[in-house]
Structures are given as C-alpha cells and as structure tokens.
Image (tube, rainbow, N blue to C red; front, side, top):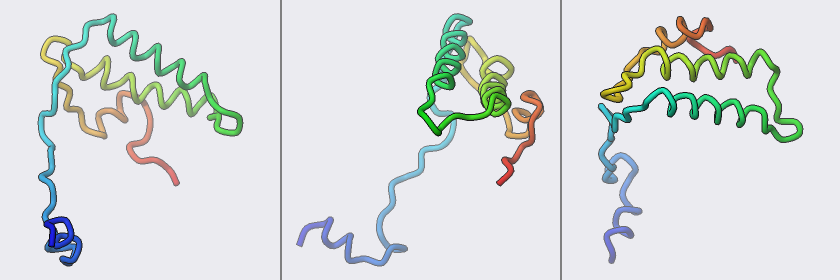
Length: 101
C-alpha cells in the first residue's frame, strides 16, 4: 500500500500537515515608480468590472485607500519591510478595522 493511500485512511487529526510558512516573507524593495505602477494597475483593475460585478464609487475609493496605506505609509522602500497592524491601516485609510456584513 502506498504512503498516500495510508495517509488517506488516517483520521484528519493524525494526518501529516505541511509546515506553516509565516514570518518575514520575502521583502521587496520598491522605488517610487514601482509603487505608482502598482496603484495604476489597481485603479485599472477597478475600472474593468464585468456587468453586474461593479462596486459603488465609494467602495472603490476605500479599497484603493486600503491598498495605498501600507504601500505609501508603511512600506520601507530600501529594505522592503512592511509590518503594519490592521488598526494602523484602518486609521491611515480612514475606515473601520472590520468589514460590515
């Protein structure tokens, strides 16, 4: 019997799991031009919506503000590190920390 067949027969809590990969991640140094390109692509993506999938203009503005906050406010252009909390992003984007249902 193969290992995958044995693994499938085990209860879920005994199956081997892959190791979680959290932490620093891969820092990406971005210069001003790269950040402007990211924001331009995000705006273009919000303009290109399918029929029935559109967001109201105020929702688009908040989504872009939430992207703008870590990109321009917290991202270190030289080292590429960016570790803001949800609360700080919400404060910078002038929106609520949680999404309403």
